[in-house]
Image 1 (cartoon, rainbow, N blue to C red):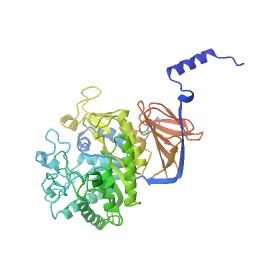
Image 2: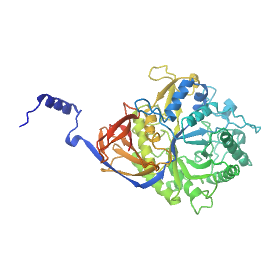
Image 3: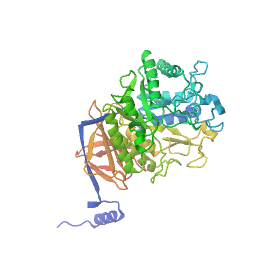
Image 4: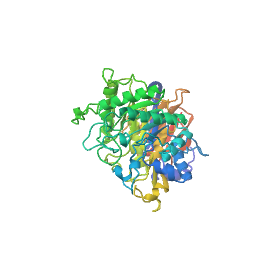
Length: 532
């Protein structure tokens, strides 16, 4: 009989009692299987926008802080310990604003004390261009290009103010039509093409141009620039813009949609009692083969419909169900049509993180969004996933990198009224930044999502979510695993070899380690990327 080592036995008992050792049925162990031959969507990129905040930060902030922010957003480098220096966004959205900044207080947007939502326009009313405008945004645009961001997109919310019906960057009260003066369509598309031409001449190529944003909303308040538009008006705009880009031999592709919700992009909202007077069911309208407004055969038009995930994520069962319905509707409209989730931040009230109000740098918001990302990628087959604004200086869950004046230790004053934030402040990373990085840093444009399955059915509330992506060039696989539960999970890939893992949890920001694939540890409340 083997003699018992009582010292080791006592240590074992203490660890078991304290909960630091799982044993038998207490261990959560799940198997994962992959079939790389079953392919789904090809990835176009993961992105965020420069809207509003980059104009001051990129122009005025100390250069070392600008570079720090740019590294967090764009860098694909690793530190000496193997940890990523940034989240390596592969798509950057550049906002072509309407000229409300030049109007000043007469724009009625913001105020002298809070000018952040106003924006400049390269074009002047006399037809001349001032390419020194957008200085702060251009700094981040160049920083993105220098750090290897693969895709660039320009987007507008409104035509230039001198082309609009009311001379403002927002629409007249009660208006549902495109806020553009009659006879100005040619001028508007010429302006957008001129901007694409100019940046091309400077060695900066915009892969995409999105000319309309959330046309379902009337945008007749003065909170920001914006315009409604009927589908037929959008169709006319695309016809003009496609012809103009093609005539100049520009390769920039038009991305249409930017629907206010995923439902508006894919279904007739009248069936839900929400008629929108020709501003919904966009996939069938623009890309249905039998539609008289079909644009899929036009030059410079990306065969993709884009939509925003707002108002569709809570409760969680609705989040899952609605995305499955949207996917079916998109396939019915055109089985070859691509889908982008092109804007999201926290707005909707919910029982997990309350709402968009009050910034949250913790894993709570990170995991809330990681779940949405997973379902957008897996249930609607999103080819691209784009967060709303990369940088924020307000007390709201709308940014990846947060700014405040540092006046109160771990936090500080925030908001558009804090004038000092236009020039300097404290930069704070969020766990959301790094959780999105678990996707964006390693799943690059051109990769393809492939089939992977877990051995046990998982809860979308507190289970394990898994998706897999293949590098078509060398066959390497990337997995993103979101553990929503309060317990550590051991994942078994069925292979006794090591793989690189990058973990975002309470303690780590995409922290690097090497783990065996037959007993890969997923910490509680974490997002983990596995390179296999």
